[in-house]
Image (tube, rainbow, N blue to C red; front, side, top):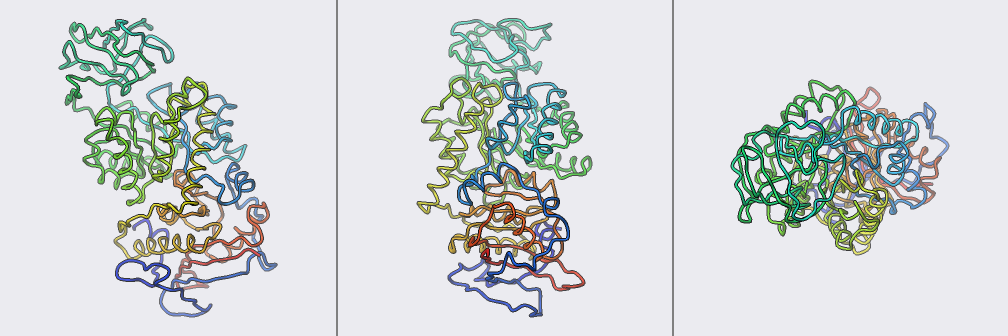
Length: 569
C-alpha cells in the first residue's frame, strides 16, 4: 500500500477546486459538529481548550515522550521562530572522533553524523557509531547515522602520508597501482589496476576536483610519472580524474556502482543499525532500487537510501534517480569535475527544486567552508555560498573535511548554524517564501488527500501566523509533506517509531518527538501538549495548528482526519 495509505488509513474530504486544493481564502472553513456522522469526514475546527483538568495520561509523561535535548533547549531559549530549520550533517574523522568532540558537535547542532567509508577501518567506524549511540542514550541527543559508500570510482589508496599533505609545485610523483609495502614519499597508490589505461603524456591529473593538479611527464607500463603544476592539499583517499585539452577524459571501465567492499560495508552498517546509506556515483535508478531491495531482506529496521549526484550521467537521469531514492546529496566537488564550474549554481538550484517537488530531502555538500580546514574563519564568499543554499531551501548542509580533518570543525558548524538561522529569519521577514509549483505525487485517494491536507495546512499556518504545526504520523509521510511546503512555523512530528525519528532528522523544519501514540487522536494531542507545557516549551496564548488522523476503532468506526487550530490556555 502507498505511504500515505499507511500513514492515513482513511478516506477524507475537503473543499477542492478542480483537482487541486483551493486557496484558503477561496475554499472557506467548514465547522463540523461533534458526533455528526456520515462518510469518512475531514474536519477543520477552532478550539480554545487545552490545559484543562480533564487531560489525563495513562502513563507518566516523561516515559512516553522523548525529544532531542538540543531542540528542547533551543525552543526554551529562542522560542518557536528561533529554531533553525535547515539540518546540519557532519563528516566524522580523526579530528572529531573522540567522545568529547562528538558531544561538542552534538551540542552545536549536528543532526546527522556521516561516516565516509573511503577512510578508516571498520573497527574505527564501529567505535564512532557506538560513541554516538551512547550520546543519544545517555545524554538525550537524537543524532542519526549515515554511512557513505566508497563506490567504484578511481581513488588514492595511499599517498605516502597518514593524513593530508601539501603538494609543492614542480615536485615529481609516481602514480601506480602496484602494492607497496609501507608508505613511500612522492608515491601515489591507486585502487584500480587499469587506472592509467588510455592516458597519454601531457594529460593532466586533477585531484579532488582541483585541490591539486599534475601533468603526466612519463608513462612506464601502467605507472605514471607526474609533475605538480598547481600545488595544493592532497587528502587521504582523494579521487582523481584525467583531463586533455581542457576536457575530461572519459573512459568506460564499466565499474559497478557498488563494489565488493561496498557490499561488505553495507552489511557492516546493517549490523550496526545505521539510519542512512549514501550511495556514491549513482548513474541510474536501478542501482538505488537494487540496494533498497537488498535492505528490505536483510534489515528489520527501515534504513533510508540517499543517492549522490556527482556525474553528468546522473543529471541526465535525475528525475528517475530522485523518485527511486529516499533523498539526494548534491556532491558538488565531483560534480564540478564532470560539468563546467559556472553551471554548478544553477544545477544545484534545479536539483533542490526537483527534490522538493518529489518530496525527497536534499543535502548540499562539498566545499561549503573549505578554507576552514586550515583557518578559523570562513571567506565571505563561502558564507554567501552557504546563504544561497539556505535561500534555495535545501533540507540540509554538510561539512566534509571541515569537520573530519580540520582544526576548526566546531567553529565551522557554528558558522552553518548562525548563517542558516539568519537567512531563514530574513526570508520570513521579507516574505520570500519560495512557492512550490506542486507536482502531484499520489495516485491513490489517500495519497492525494494527504497532499491536499498538508498543502492547505501550511497555507493556513502561514496566513494565521500560528506558532507551530503539530503532526501525528506513523511513518513520517505527512511530516515530510508539510516540510515540502517550507512553512514559517516549525513542524513538531509526533511518532512512536524510532526509525521515523531518525529519518525525519533530515527533513527541513521538522522537530521529531518519540511518543507512545494511541488510536485516540484527541488523547494524543492532549498528552503531547501537556508534556510540552510541563517542560516550559509552550506557553499560555500560543497557537498551534494540529494535523491528525484517526484510524477506525470499535469506539469510532468511522475514519476521519482533521486540521485543528488550538490556542493554549
